[in-house]
Amino acid sequence: MSVPEDGAQAWAAAWELLLPAATAPARARGRTLQSALREAVRSARLAPGTRLPSSRELAADLGVSRGLVTEAYEQLTAEGYLRADRGSGTWVGGAARAPAPRARDLAPGALHARVDFLPGSPDLSLFPRSAWAAAQRAVLAELPHHGLGYPDPRGLPRLRTALAELLTRRRGVVADPERVIVCSGVAQAISLLGQVLYARGERTLGAEDPGSPEHAQQLATAQIATVRLPLDEEGLALEPLRALREVRTVISTPSHQFPSGIAYSARRRAELLDWARAVDGLVVEDDYDGDFRYDRAPVGALQGLDPERVAYTGSVSKSLAPGLRLGWLLVPDALAEDIVAHKRVMDLGNPVLDQELLAHFIEGGGYDRQLRRCQRAYRERRDILVSALAEHFPGTEVTGIAAGLHIIARIPARYGPQDAFLARAAEAGVALRPLSGYTSALPDDGAIRLVIGYAQLAPARIADGVRLLARATKAGP
Ligand SMILES: Cc1ncc(COP(=O)(O)O)c(C=O)c1O
Image (tube, rainbow, N blue to C red; front, top):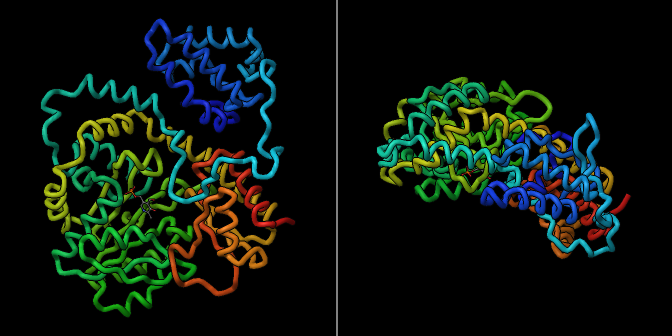
């Protein structure tokens, strides 16, 4: 959706209320839109001072006529909900409502809703519902009957072509459509790799420490064990890996290590590939949030350096929504046939309508637009989180902030001990995950180490959440 940047966050929160206008019967559409806008202003989802999209943009996003939106804006302006400033657009006025109390003015304990700082989720309210609905209509209208038969287990050629172009352009991978296998997220990609590697005699894989506990669980379903390997400041440490004679495959997150947030150095990337060549092995590259880098261009995927030594996987779980269960796997030629055979046995391929939809969405530029929109929103949220922590927990070190949807915070020991800190946070309704959930190798210095997810929270909620946390843990400058 095209939304004025200054109102993007507020707009995301109000968008859900407006959706019924897109699906209401034609004769009720205008009325539905007007009451939804009124409700958004009354409930403060659209706060005074928020700039609304132009009538042309909102009409396009909702799939309704422009006249209907103009009429709604005029009506609400007449009622005092909105204010039209010649030349600068339509704004939320505020005359017709009593100002809602701001969270920071509330009494302690009045913030009843839980503040969820757990890592792993994008902002699901940014899902491009109307563009998706339009893609759905187009796909159903154009799909021939035979398109509803069993798909190619590798994925529809149309989607593999769209993904190959997207991943080559955005992530620097070596991808032609023949190399792309569509799957149900990174989770299925890892399970498939585990099965094929097991059938080839591998029993133990190397994994990063700290790292994703899910990787180990997914590999365990293929009866593959994982050995945790430490990181240093450049990425996965190679000496411990070289010492493990039985390990020929490592699973890694080189562009944005999960959860520490570091990017592997160029030297470490080259060394890791040298190791893989020397042992005739494989590096599995989980590019779980490779698109979200805030301060400079994303680090290109490792796979681009040696596509015959890297199995590359990613998904739409962070860019669109994890509930879509759609992802991709690009494997070296030597593995491709076996992976596809396992995919066929596992589920006969991903649902065709979902694949057509994603292809349509990528081809029309919707995917790039979505990434730009999320990038803007998440960068702002990250900045708010970092400054709120600096204000309320002085001395806190934050790392892993250059990319992704979470940061690592090291809060000084004087706010601890960690268990008591977490217990007080939980009592106050602030959900937090300690870094110790991802590793057992942490310095014993009494500091509180947290993996804080911020992408799913509106900016005001982030600031209020940190304030609430400070109050609950009796911290203060
Ligand atoms: C390290 C890592 N990789 C991958 C994913 C995404 O998995 P999927 O694509 O199966 O949703 C996640 C999800 O949070 C993750 O933490």
